[in-house]
Image (cartoon, rainbow, N blue to C red; front, top):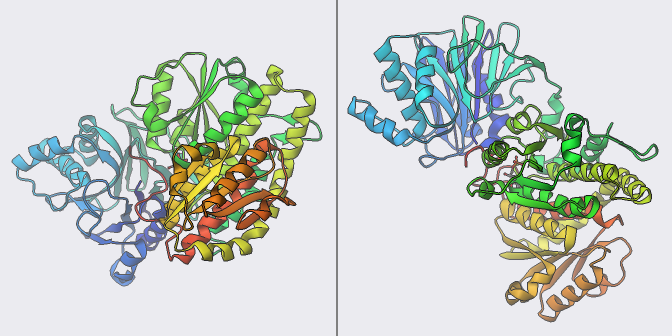
Length: 611
Ligand code: F6R
């Protein structure tokens, strides 16, 4: 959570930092601030969005070729001007931006207070910069050394950048556990939480590793580890287009990303699968092929929407590979003493590749000898790098906070993986394999068709805009889709929603049903169709309002449901890829009609880099 941007070079820093913060606003948006150095070290910060900060400033007063900026998702201290970053040290010489949490800040704060430091905010970050200032003063060393010593004593996670009033051409940065990318341009450097603020200026980037300290002084770059040993930066060329991170004519990123799914699923399949030749390959698997093929168990760890994708995968893996599969919330897995064997293969699923709980679950599983296969969207992310092997989802940047195209891309990659394993193990017939890869290739065009219901769904949404609750029901591989539909609605429209396996309704939730309760059924033609039809009748008998997602041409359910939304026919195992589309659109339109900030829902952030 929180986004950081820093610039030093020959251009004006302020416009670059403001633009960068807007691109990172998905990471947190309760306050924003910048610090610029031009003789004085000046900090400007404000509660609210980056645009509120921008509106309060006049760029004419902000001339400087070096600066740092921050957009915050509050952890310590409520969102207000004082708790916003950057934070000065007590003597006003240093300013810091920080993404992460310093866990031992209370003890450090007490010690610093006893030495005369006075704190203006409630943040751990202000304690951090004062701790650095104290070491800097005590040792009379250079700032980089003071930072290095401080980092040996702090416990927690950080991506920090520091400005020193007395060093007009210097940025010191460091990372542990929170993401940081360095951009190297012509006589200029940028540092950011991800590459989106950087790509306009340079495509050359270095992903900073944990415990590395970056020092940029008078145009010279050096990177050292926490033991003061110099490390060689691994410079990579970014493959990211500017238009991929812009709205492209859509009103919101979320809608753009929903509509991108025919393309993002096709990109995910591209070069990996060809139904005509029967070719299916996942490059990331090659080195660990034997380990995966001989796994005793597949264990999926993830959070949120990625956890729902993992639940879909559980059905598909067990059905096709006949190897036991289990799904765990990363946040639960990491805090018990899970039984993990060397023969286990752990799939870590994450759009951002930065989710703190998923990262910690990986480290725990690794320590128990398991092999980790990462399925991430963000190239070069921490989870991608912490995994032994992996496949990217290639969905392109997902900027709307509510995950949409990442989900379908994750399910697509995991389906290919299950097919590959099943084929190698001989747990699938050649005919079924061919049938499934042919149908998988048809999915992008079928998603395109499912998107045609958009206008109808917008109308339907207006009937449910004032609902206070909603129930989502599905069976089998579409039970996780019900969970995902409910999550989408609650997170962006703030309507309480629950997802349930349809058969569980009788064990409790049925008590909720009355004429005010919308019940969204995933009722496409599959092996559970007749059972779902009975469930719909049970809801109708209690006067619930039924919205049913049905297969094109269904004639039975339209006679019972209040509303139907059609999706194209497909194989049951692939149906989540189509059935989730109307649910994404429904939540989007309800949220827009309720006047909610769809791309930046309250209290949320795109990457949950704190536990
Ligand atoms: C929901 C959503 C979150 C994320 C979760 C995991 O729309 O976006 O639930 O799915 O925070 O994030 P990643 O996939 O980045 O690990």
